[in-house]
Image 1 (cartoon, rainbow, N blue to C red):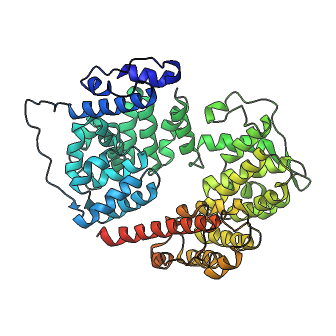
Image 2: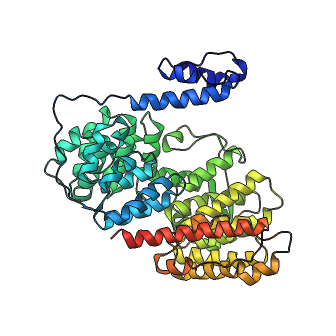
Image 3: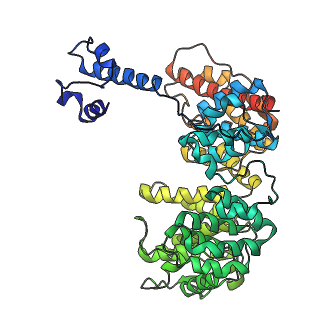
Length: 529
């Protein structure tokens, strides 16, 4: 088999006379294949050898029978749901959202995965799907996972089978001897009921943990985070692992009275001042020696200058509400007093990042309006990297806005796109909080059904450029955002003109895929009960 792998890597064109041997009885069978078709011989030989080896694998012998699985605590899914779940597992690489939705319903309803599908489920490779699977594998699924090295991921999940959300009697033993996933979960539970105890546990083992464990366990402190955690987090800022330092920075930024917050505010106020009623900037000439410890990086992205990058990072770590109290101005007033120079963009980018991170409701709408106007202004003038970076800021702001406000903005953009389609606005659809509200989903459905109604398609089918792209580009992602309340309306069939035009075939295919996804979601609601 090794010789076949080597031949495939090097290329058959360079070794046309190479012997293709597997060292198995398959060689005698493949010897009768035509000699001049080396590619065909290689593929057939490799396939036959692989099947031969699989068929000939001997079962592993064990001295003693393993302990049977514990009594099942979950109600196994009805047999009628097996075809649905099998199909969702098969689709999970292309449409993971559907399987994740089904797994969420199963957990909410106390359902366990069908036994016949456990091997297929245990073979999942996506981390988000594995995390959602662990609570519904049941006692038998967790028991089965120990017999295949590929399934060992189950033991690393932050889930304790057979336990409720409360603390089990062997909590201390799990913390000392469990897998990283189990230890993270038990620390989370302890942190929920006794924050000081969880912190003490973490402090006791901090020095002997590996970087991956330190980062994962430190993240648990987000539960009940308080000033009492500051000392441990400050210690973590000096950690050798960048991932641990980044986690500590993210947590310290949530403590407005911490020394970290004071350091960032001091840097920010040294850079940003009010001069003659206008905001002005005094950027440092050098990167501070202690800045890196607080998570700041010296080297900027390609589209930014070095000192501008320092400003953005500092402002990003300061809640925007600080500037309201510091300058005694509202967000709108501060945006009206921006410096009349290219620096205004840098300043507002820092505020936008901070507003998205801290989700400050008074700042987000004002910043969205500012960036939307700026993006429209620079669209035809700036380089692609600048436009792309600006659009990413718009995405972050829209994603952080409260759902009703974000949907109102998006609906206005979609109504504009009916007259003058813009691909960028359609990309923003997937940033909206999910599930969509029934009102917004209904409005969107009305727009798209009118856009692709039978009368509109018949009217435009002779036109060279049918609207085949923008309105259809993100339909599959939109289908999984649809609210349950109006799934039936979205699943209603579409009517198409009788034509063989390639544009119409494309439209029909995209809309049928959308309908199919909606129908699968209806089946999830119906069968997982």
